[in-house]
Length: 125
Image (cartoon, rainbow, N blue to C red; front, side, top):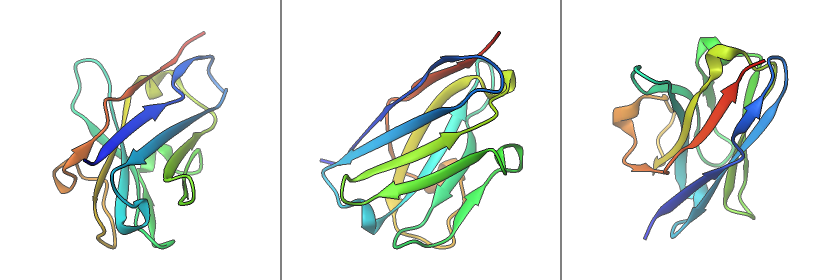
């Protein structure tokens, strides 16, 4: 059974960094497109980034470009989201999602059918 488990969230101050992990089980990560999404209280879930398999194209939302970076470790079946220069408006629950590979990927919620449970990121001084 396909399963995604996020970790690495926490409380940080503005300007600091976090690295989120998304551990996949029950499927081979390299066959799937992976997306990262986030949902702040009272807001819709929004796409942050996505990565197509086999080193394919990665896409970032404008509000995280040059600050966030998605990467894969296929040997560990894990995807990472490196988040630098965090801002208070980055506070949200972050989710990873998987879908059979499609390229170019788009971090659009309706394009992904398998989801993790989320990890909380809070950016506050």
